[in-house]
Image 1: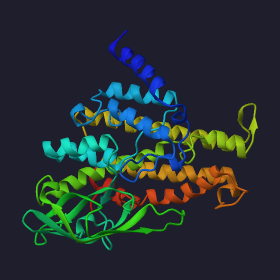
Image 2: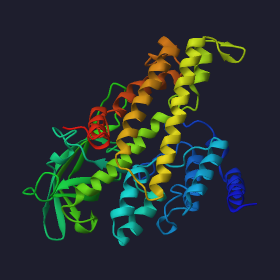
Image 3: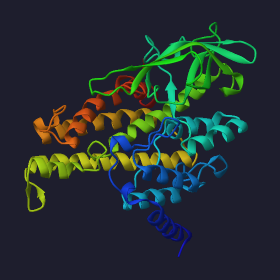
Image 4: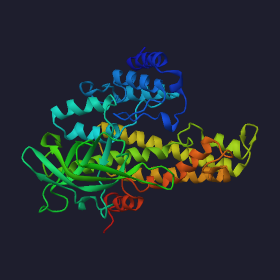
Amino acid sequence: MSELEDFRAETRAWLEENCPASMRTPTPESEVVWGGRKQEWTNPDSKTWMEAMAEKGWTVPLWPSEYGGGHLSIDQDRILLEEMRRINARSPLQSFGIWMLGPALLEFASEEQKRYYLPQIARGEIRWCQGYSEPNFGSDLAGLQTHAEDKGDYYLINGSKIWTSFADMADWIFCLVRTDPAAPKHEGISFLLFDMASEGVDTKPIPLISGASPFCQTFFDDVKVPKTQLIGELNKGWTIAKRLLQHERQMISGIGGNSALGGTGTRMENVAKQYVGESDGLIADPAIRADVCEHRMNDKAFQLTMARSGEEARAGKPDGNLASIFKYYGTEQNKRKYERLLELMGTQMVGWEGESFTDREINSTRQWLRSKANSIEGGTSEVQLNVIAKRVLGLPD
């Protein structure tokens, strides 16, 4: 057997032995693992699974082992994902630290900072939120006004952020602040990390039409942040911010390449068979069958394109502009998915509560409404189209 075949066999055996049966089922919202101090373990198996994967280094399989990662090769990482999908294993840990902050720390943080923060991220010990957007400066990120005053050993932070996802549940924040108000707009910005339990930090959830409140407005009133928590160079935070936005947009774009319904694992074709009808094992309506097939093919093409781009980036050929393309297409594809599901499920997907609707149908309604926000967060679709027009197509302003 080749080394990769050996790795596949070992991985398959390890997953069979260590992945609990309940972790091989669709993930209800109440059992999603975000980690951190406020994590509630409604299913004890979730904790067992996360800890086992973290000990193996497989919550962040591509990260170096000294930072809590699995130090896998690209091919090994692909095999791990394939073997997890084979048994329908849940993701052990959802984390902005893994998707966005971690890659930025690997690139810009000091060695001491990497060894302190990255293992905690890998083990799910810190839940992070992102302090970027501000009132009146949504898409104009560089116009931020939250400022940090140099007080010798620490910075004094004052200002506010808005649309801060899960700020009320987060332990720490990675935050952009203005450290030189006299500098040009894109300069004089620094990248800080600090504890959300710090004195002077306050959060206020923003209710959405989906019924949930994942976004918050976050206020900073004389918050003291040690200078050791500055990442990268002082006044050079915009460079880190841009790189992290690329990771964020790629993360958000990934939701578009999945035909499953609302995270329940139910495929669109099965939804169509249930609500439209089935004939000889096929969706009864040929037009709907063709529509579902088209959506699935677009999903697959998008997944393969993202995978190819990822391999090119790891081979030293990154293209930062692709993040905008993926973010735009992925979020628009996700909106199209829920519009199609609405057509399939009809009035059963416009219920809010009551015995006439199943939990899946109610969840689908909320996910449909939530999908609209995906095309706004991380840079609106209009902003992404502007980036593509200028930096990819080379069109004039």
